[in-house]
Amino acid sequence: MARVPFNPKIGTIKTDAGNLGIDRSFLAHYAISAADATAESDTAVMALTALGAEASEVTTGLTDPTVPRNIKVDASAAITTDVTVNGTNFAGEAISETLTLNGTMAVAGSLAFSSVTSVELPAATTTPAYQVATVAVTQGAQGAGSTVFTFVSAATGAAFDVTVAFLAADDTTAEAAVKLRAGLNANATFAAKWTAGGSSASVTITAKDYAAQDATINLTVKTAGDSAVTLGAITVDTTAGVAEDKVSVGVGKKFGIPYMLSADELVLVKLFNNSADAGAVTADADELEKNVIALNGTPDGLKPIDLHIIV
Image (cartoon, rainbow, N blue to C red):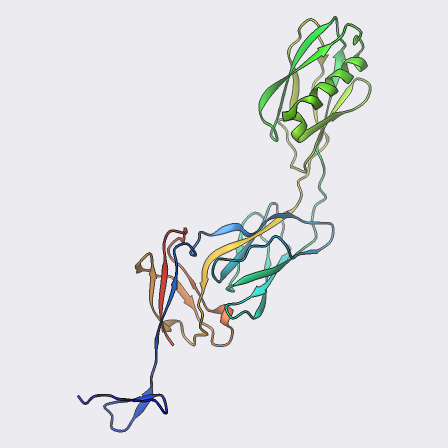
């Protein structure tokens, strides 16, 4: 077979078919380092962010993907409204994608984002509320001394004790309730998540954060002591707690390809961690951001990706 020369003037190479020349192609190698092939995440771009009474747009506190890849949106509750992510593609061109939330199940997009410039959030679908529980002091101090109370809630974790000192003069339920409120609020663990208030013999315990109703909250007498103060049963839902609707944005496992491909077969070799990967390539000859590979393997920031592409 005769040597096949290249004609640089017209960019063709000769064939064995007489004077027939055909276009020359190139083999490109797109390598993504292990460090840039990070694991999927629901919050890598934007941490869980509370929704307001009206739709809003987040433009700060956003983190770009390490390399162009698809984004994911997730919610903290059963929300099914739309989130729009704005940013740029591999070429720095503006793109946007609107995804419909599916509650707490993450929804993955299809476009490869090189950067995220803003996230358009919907209005909240629920009205958040601070939980309020109520317990009554049913017996004032019977003498000077201390009573040990035990408090427990989901927000503060394991049950802990609060020791409150009473005077003999705190013999009415209202006076004892004043001392109990002060003792609770002076406890750092309690005060980090709750505020004790109320009037007369009533002690209200109000959450400092919006959260779902906590049925485990309780305040009881552990050791009556010389003061022998007693409490009634707690009412956990004087005001039921309602958590805020929140949304986060993360990254999926579809990695952008820096070429507008006419066919997925142009990606000849797909390697993940130096082994063949059966991931599916999506090709699009018109929009760069639609050219992606959905890995079959699981990226974790420890394994490289190598694509060999005919261009």
